[in-house]
Image 1 (cartoon, rainbow, N blue to C red):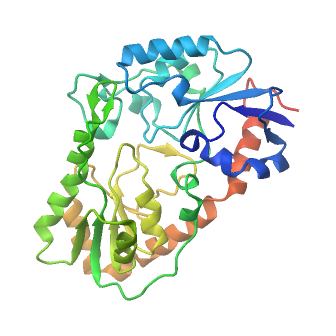
Image 2: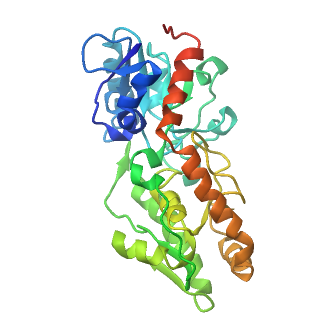
Image 3: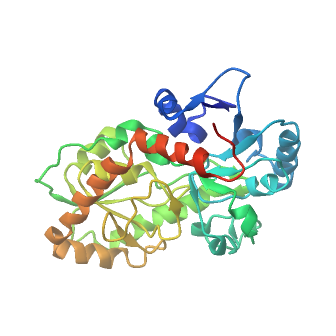
Amino acid sequence: MIKIRLTDPSNVKCFSGLIHTRDLLREYSIDITDSGDYDYEFVHADEFMNLSLSLEKSIDQGRENMAKKSGDYFMFHGGDSTSIMGAYEVFVESDAKYLFKKQLLSQEDYKEETIINKWFFGSGSILDKGYDIPNDVYNRMKLTGYNVAHNWPHLQHMQEGNSNRDIDVCAIFQGILDNGNMDHEVRTDVLYTEHRKGAWDELEKIENRYKITKGSSSFQSFVNVMKRSKIGLSPFGMGELCYRDLEIIQHGCLLIKPDMGKVITEPDFFKPMETYVPVKPDWSDLNETIEKILDNFKDYQYIIDNAREKVVEMYTYQNVCMYWYNFFANLNGVESE
């Protein structure tokens, strides 16, 4: 039995898949314990990152905290995006065996300098970051085996479909964020708004031809619209994956989303033209894509059906447990009984 200690057992952002499978994991010889008797410590991001500080101060604080650790530990970055900024600098100078994230980029894609290391925000800020990651370090950057749907288990349950769909496009989401949110002294709310409101601006050009519902609303109003919609639009937020991705599929709509081809995650149900329809992150082909779909909507029903099947198949607690069983059984540098 491998014994794991979570530094904050209530931290859903970092440990959602492990929290929800805690009892089941014991059947796979993995015990999440609250005692001081453990083999490996899983360290959540708040111990090595502080977004309210400058990047330099956050890194210094993270290094100091990790230097106090003893025994074998893994660092868990529970952030919404593929960005490794602030975590990577601490990781490479720590004794952590691995850095875990819910989603990653390829080594090549990490080289590109982008705003706070988020490729979808573009470049040109006071804090553009890219990373030329050595092979031995990248090999110690691992996926957690769970992502956004594991935060809220209800997203894994498909709702009964509705054949009477009189709304062409549902584009209900938080589009305007003006809360002064900062990541290491960079305003991220402005970037968030620029991307999301950009989708609404594009849709205005075809509103005279199609029935489109957009803007913000209560969750129940959103659900009611989803049940009547053919297409659901899910933009990026502070990260690439979004609850809307699953909610759109859950309610039987066709998911349109910025291209997820760069993103590496597990489970990965983002298969272009198999489980969703990709568009460019700048929305330049959004309206053309919508027009093509609505001209022959019945030809896209297979994507809706396939997406629902894949979510049910992939998002199981057994899959999370098997992922971690295989991790401990096969990963170099980790001993198991």
